[in-house]
Image (tube, rainbow, N blue to C red):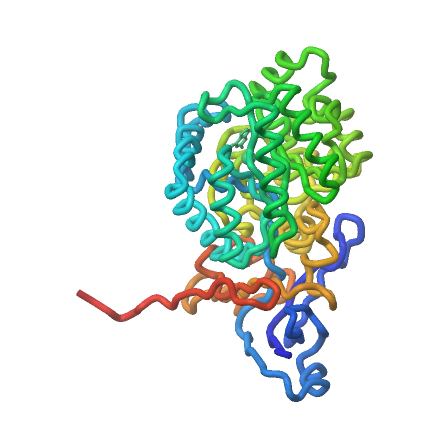
Length: 440
Ligand SMILES: O=c1[nH]c(=O)c2nc[nH]c2[nH]1
Ligand SMILES: [Zn+2]
């Protein structure tokens, strides 16, 4: 048993439904067992007295949060981050798809996978729903590297059969065969799960969506993810490609792909009908505010999603987004809602923490295992501790409440403030202290 002594913050409930779910303990502790599960949580003095033999990891001076859960992030797109100046379809054609084609080479894919997984961990992300590569070989490489990294990933091969580039196209039969082989090899192995992943209806014929549906029916535990209603030009093109569909969601719905296992990224331009069906089917929307701003996609109608009863989580959407930081994503989500004025939903610290952690666990059906520090869950955690002397350190030192400390963290925090990260009690990242005072 090991006792982690720290200032703890987590949201073991949904603050959009029940305000006041933020729990903060100033001198708190988590007792973690040999399986990496939380055996007890509470004030440090109490846990210490009850478990005098436990070894103590002293994390005072920072904040211990549940590991972040990123519900939309593209593995092949690390190296295209920063490609500013375009909207979705031009950005895909000119910057992103040429890079994705390079993952046909497994050695290249391995380097990218390692860069990607290291960046997730260094930003405190312990679980991610990962949009994969179009190549089965690159997915083999990815799952192997993910197992080595210790992170939890829900990932799948991306499938498409039109309008991208020929080398990224497959066929329904091949999509089914390769998907099946990957699921049998990786789903439920270690900390990996599989997600069936058509890129978007624009690049997926009814045949491809049918192959995805066949996999979902055959493997009732695998997850599903895709894109929806991101950009007006994209939405118009999908309408033209599926003249029989009522709207974008209907293209997935007709194939039986809208279920509680589905996470649809973006949903910036939904109709009321689409929101009603998403809510009724228990499917989640992954909100990616940095990407929506960067690609000029629009302002996410969070209020309408919540009013309809659609579950919402957060995603960084690397590389359309602006990096791996779920703190930055939370801040941009807050900005977006502020910019919407009356139509926006205020996002205080409690809601931001929930969106960056537990909401993701709920979207992935993992809320019994991760997402907060409840007893029985895995110890997946990020320790945030700014280096002394910076602005965040100053603000935290004077924060009048836990909420203010947390909102300062979302406002000012960066990758450099992530000091240590654990998954299931195993250290997966530790910040290297910069060498200071060396000149020449
Ligand atoms: O933000 C996005 N990134 C992508 O790579 C993509 N592909 C289809 N639609 C997409 N949207
Ligand atoms: Zn995306």
